[in-house]
Amino acid sequence: MSMSPEGIFFTRGAIIKDNRPLSFEYVPDKLPFREDKLRELSIKYRPLLYSGIPQHVAMTGPVGTGKTVVARRFSELLTEAGIEAGVCIKVVYVNCRQRKTDSMVLLGVLNQFDEHFPDRGFSKQEMLRIIKKHMTKSRCHLLVILDEADVLLKKSGSDLIYNFTRFQEEHDTPYSVSTILISQKNPLNFLDPSTLSTFKRTNLLHFGKYNWEALKTIVEQRIELAFYPGVVDPDIPDLIADMSEETGDARFAIELLGRAAEIAEERGEERVTPEHARAAKALTKPYIFEDLLNTLNIHQQIQLLAAARLLKHKSYTTTGELESEYRVLCEELSKKPLGHTQFWQYLKELDAQGVITTRRSGKGVVGNTTQITIADIPAEEIIRYLEKRLLSK
Image (cartoon, rainbow, N blue to C red; front, side, top):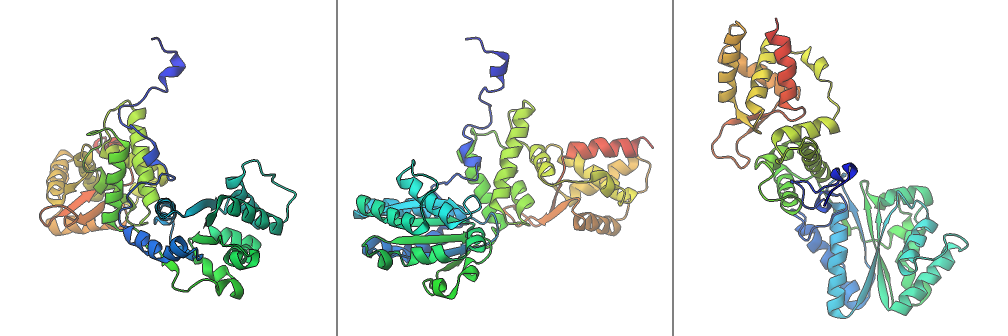
């Protein structure tokens, strides 16, 4: 079958088999390093499942620490447990950055029951009564997940949260409304005293930044789910974990992985390499490379060129390999090489400036040596620039 020239652009690539696991909205069956949060939530919401008693939990922590994916996965597990127990629990997810007012949130809830419900003409109390009718008709409890809840609370106050927490008694119904509030800032700080009294202080779950091991495991999981076997360099999880460890942001790590694969496919290559990951990092973090080089002395430039040559086709090199390559380059450039102590001092300065990244080999590597990588810019770009700068003199 012939294909139009335009159709060629949409042929399936040889690297990515499924783009969904590279999306921020994807919810995997297993959540590495967040199983403890799922257990905590399951314990807190047991009264809802077995006695119909509403529960309210706030989740806080920096971006990319798993708050939303944990809430979504928990809601799936709670719904499944409800089916097994013969209890209907309907879950509604609302992003409060998109729905910033009480009425918009209530409309989002109503649309889950009736997608044609009109978007104006009803007061908040009328919408709450209509929600009650839908819950009674379907015999369901309701769990409302309010993501970025601080946006709603700053804009509209905490009246709606109060209405949800008092839903059963105010509407005289056996069916309850539970909530999960998600925010980078502690959402309890935005509640008025009356609403705050309905939240247990212990129902605040804090999500810390992911550590290096967690980021590596998450990247490994997404590679297994999204890519064809054997198309990703085995060092990629370590390298991306290094790149994202400072922020502890799993979203950033997943973004780097997906962008690296796109770069490989754009170049017509069939394997994701460290260079693709470095190119992805350079795109997500603007890097004024030439300005930085002007701050380096000649021997640091030689060190960086030596590192780039060694790292062009791999993720990491060692200080021993780098010093040997540095001496070769010094001979090539007719420069007297530094002694070992001064060489090491200059290398530490490069690390402090973020030009290179060093780590001890304890992170999954046998032995106890210092490993070196370049994280923020492709090695081939460094080689091209520094060879022109150094070898043309």
